[in-house]
Length: 319
Ligand code: F6P
Image (cartoon, rainbow, N blue to C red; front, side, top):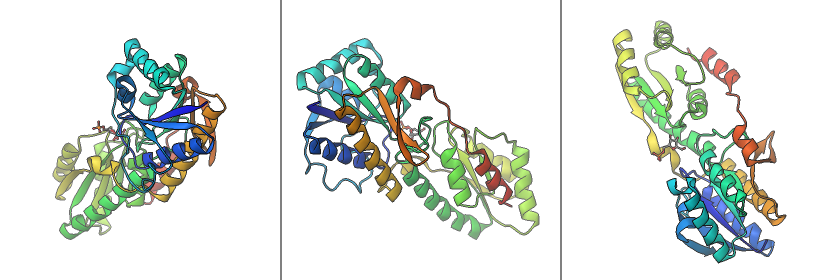
């Protein structure tokens, strides 16, 4: 393979820049040319591509966001969009593409691979909701950001003897909620993966109160939502003043952590390694601390166990 592209797609995640850097540098080291495709699959359809050199990816490993911009692309779900993308690749001599994103982006990568442009997916999303990998790039940074925010909320909750209900991102997955909750000593963690009732939540607060606790943190996963409603119910039932905070997009920004930079560098490198061997339609990920790769269709059908044991521990030690 003589020339490859790299693009970031879907929601941005800290560490995407580190992937772009690793892809560019390792491809150039193997004698390939590299281009960056702007704004995800949109750039492939419109031909919005830029050359990447060893120096154009300098000074980005520590930056959040993505230097290539990102977007979700509805047109790419249709044959016409796919054909335009294929045409751009052929016209520019692009034989393979590294796609950094989530499951939606991998579907596009499979469709393009089936049309002769080999793609390798790299899991980049703060949600950690990709089944074929234990870890997605951006997850660690997002959890650390959420943890810092919850620590700050605890200060004010403590000062006012309040209950702070904090909603964290994760789409339909509760990984950020569970891990942030345990790291912040939340009194209750509400996720879609674990059954709960408001009576359980209220009873937990009341029991803790009876043992002398004055302030409470309740972490709520985005998929549950209703944080304002939950706050009202808690206040009514317990008499503890309650405030809801939705952390939102702050969780997507910031300088990537050590873990995100390292995993991004490893997976970017391996993605290029596969392409250089003429292998596409794969997704790379991490299983048991090892880099693995799977056929994209197979990866999309895999399922992931929630961390039930960690949830049980969190529940047992928060009172
Ligand atoms: O997938 C990352 C994520 O931040 C989710 O946690 C959230 O549900 C979604 O993206 C928000 O998307 P948008 O940036 O389009 O509002």
